[in-house]
Image: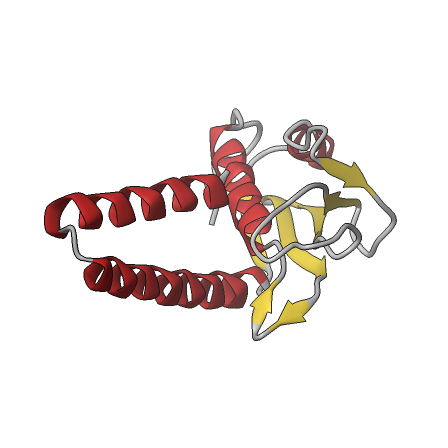
Length: 162
């Protein structure tokens, strides 16, 4: 989804450059700037995707794992891995040219007296030019998980996702 939005933005920038200037040189410079911006964004997202994110949620671990598992649809395949939940992305993403190179996202939930600590990390990935292949899929899903955990009803002591 992120890659589709980015591609539409690129097409709009290039077409607007053509209609405004009607100069092939200007459109080519816009194209190069867009490619460079895509590469920089992919590097920044890749650095974020390789880091583990931890959340503290005031709920039970069963509720949290059920809520997180419900976010993974047909574009994700459940696989074996180091987490309690492990999903491998399916289909195309940023830099994905063949099947089998998609990243794997792992999730753990551990119950503590103050709530459930949820850990989300990318447990398997392939680098290409410093970029995690399929990083757009990982980052978009991390955002979905963060929003879903923030929306969970509070049970027990009041604490918020961190």
